[in-house]
Image 1 (cartoon, rainbow, N blue to C red):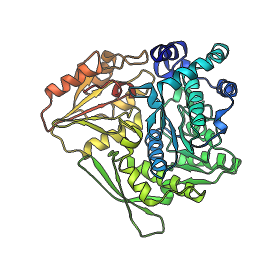
Image 2: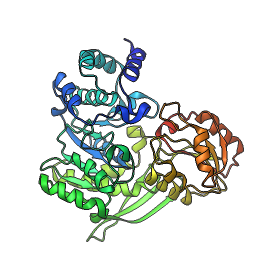
Image 3: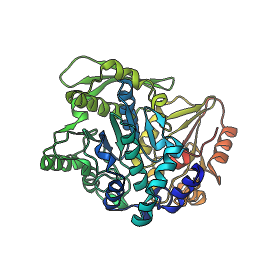
Image 4: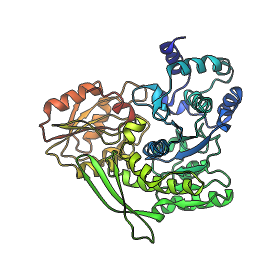
Amino acid sequence: MNYEETLHYLFTRLPMFSRIGAAAYKKDLTNTVQLCDYIGNPQHRFKTIHIAGTNGKGSTSHMLAAILQTADYKTGLYTSPHLRDFRERFRMDGAMIEEAFIIDFTRRIQPAIDQIEPSFFEITVAMAFDYFAQHEVDIAVIETGLGGRLDSTNIITPELSIITNIGWDHMNLLGNTLEEIAFEKAGIIKPGVPVIVGETAVPSRQVFEAVAAEKQSPLFFADQLRYVADWKYEHHELQVQVTRNGHDERIPYRLDLPGHYQTKNLVTVLEAVHQLQQQGWQLPLESVQAALQQVKSLTGLHGRWELIHRNPAVVLDVGHNEDGMRQIISQIELTDHQHLHMVIGMVKDKEVEKVLQQLPKEATYYFTKAPIPRALPEDQLAAQANTYGLEGHTYADVNTALKAALHNAHKNDLIVVCGSVFVVGEVVL
């Protein structure tokens, strides 16, 4: 098979969560264990950092990878889903995996695929581990796909576990209370391995404390150890000053990820850096500061309050659940603009009502959908939105919707494309 044939095989032969949803989710690690055993358990041949959380785990993963790269460590990065190119999921020092490796790996593992019947995600996890092992990375940052305890990535024993936060998402799979969701995320905590929780919340804190105590894992709540003393957002850049509790010194950072919500992720990342330094990793402040100014160029991260056009401003953001949309609305309020246009599409298995009820009524809406089976039809989304006083027209695809917004917008207006990773991934401008 050539590369295009290999991708077609992977996308159509295997159950894929991003396309069909819960039917592709395997509540078991058996398949991943068997796949990795088939290829010689590559996950044991390199060091890792494991990251879970409802929101922010992608940004946190990319920030840490950028810092490790800048400090001259050969760094792997595994994230999901991808926006445009399948190879985005697997990076080494920022560069995407080679097409030849994907072809060769798929050929080698095909007998196991026929025997085990794994999901698409289980295959990509095994591929990532094999890629990082063969290239002898110093460390790899591994982002969970969904949850933690039963996530396919959860067969590693990392140097550090990170849980960014707990919020409402994937309740049909992870639980109907924050405590239940926290328990699933806490499943990445390994015996004796330090764990960082980014944001402290009463319902989840007790869960993390109980699991960490049982595993005898040192537990650190990042927002109890550091705080943002000052911040400024202008010209689509974030300038932040961070202070450690009990210290007066304010350390400045400039972020090329300009969303205000990145201040929370920054505090988590800085505590992670501190814990890695305690383990002997050489991560000088200068490397940290330099890396955070160029996360996008170092790691290829996109879709986090990403400005892609000026006059009018067009911003892409992959926020897609209740908490993520709340952060987008906060960022919109910080942004100078005359009128707001929102190009929005969602998937069926999200809590659409909780997202819609947060959206501003004074905006003009362009309801659309991504070309995946999970997508909520644009007319259904518009009908639900109308019950909350949100008005606009429907469009069969994302780029038609965006063109309409650009046609209607004045140069001082703001256009935000959001609601789904898959909607953002369709944008061509």
